[in-house]
Length: 429
Ligand code: HEM
Image 1 (cartoon, protein in one colour):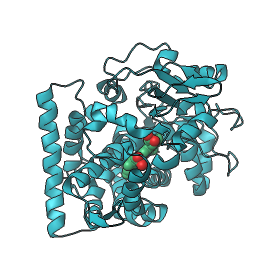
Image 2: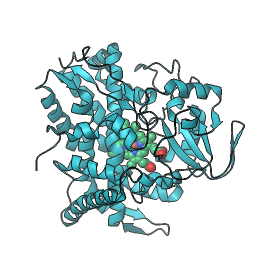
Image 3: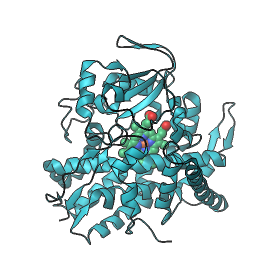
Image 4: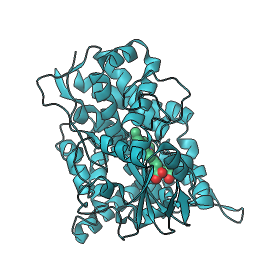
């Protein structure tokens, strides 16, 4: 089976278009909304209304959530951090109300408390830093980056958004799962369609869902018969701790759910965040040079990118009990928007928060771009390794790379849902 990693495949342009992705999820395409978010935060850190309403944006045609609960928004670091950490009070069960996430099955994203802990603890060892370096990086990331850079070396100019940022993460998560070759893109097409219950005819959604199931079932059956060194084989070997102290293996539905979540969570986010970071490095060129001369600065540059411009600037929670935050009473049953975009620019935490600066003193507060608390991104170390290896590789092969001055100016698009760069046109030198 041919690998789609380096193939000329029109589906990349189709699938990895920030505008299309945002609109297909019911979002919008406005440019950088950070100044508006910052202004709201400075007005008051907790407000009645959804972030969308507070920013005076038109209602999204297909909202992520189904029912109309009262809405509140928190905007500063202290309150977003608290809402992320106190998951029993500010509950991730909210995702149950999203038709797209519901489609993923029984996923840790929407679990809380003990159940979440038991399901997460089981898979955590596959995603810790040493595994990200010695397993993910060694098995899949290094080779994939090398193949992509070989392809770039045949070009004089490139749009890194499509030629690198889009191709790498989707391939890594699907390879890690055990799906190979051309399957990465085919799987992503079906997975995305299977989650678009609000925009596509139901027959199309069901058909895509069945395809996702069929492709995963094939891998699971194969790995049951003969385990390999991949995530599905590891999931098959996992044992879930039960409430009564016993243990049992995961059933197929639980394995399906993990695979769907990991592929979904790991594909789009790293694509957009890598693009945002590269754009910042190339527009603040002294930082590109600093990283090129001292590779230990690449990780801080990535972290600073996720602080300065997290690809997803807002997450939701369900308020389980009436609570008062900064003088505002939020009734039980409300939906809470946590505006991580504004929290990550909180002047109470960072000096000159609106400046991208890779030399910020270490040991400052951790930003919220990967979340915080019990649901903090499971894949963050994997994602960071993907970005580190990609940026290192670019610096090795194209040390003097610059943004192409003749190409249209790249823009940040995606509005509130999935922010990313429209393109990253570069001259490879
Ligand atoms: C730059 C890239 C990424 C960003 C910015 C990001 C961001 C996030 C955030 C903010 C959350 C918390 C959601 C919440 O609290 O409701 C999260 C959760 C999660 N992420 Fe990531 N993510 C990235 C890459 C990845 C990758 C590569 C994977 C998998 C390989 C992954 C897998 C997950 C999973 C499974 C969860 C759910 C964890 C839980 O509920 O306990 N993410 N991510």
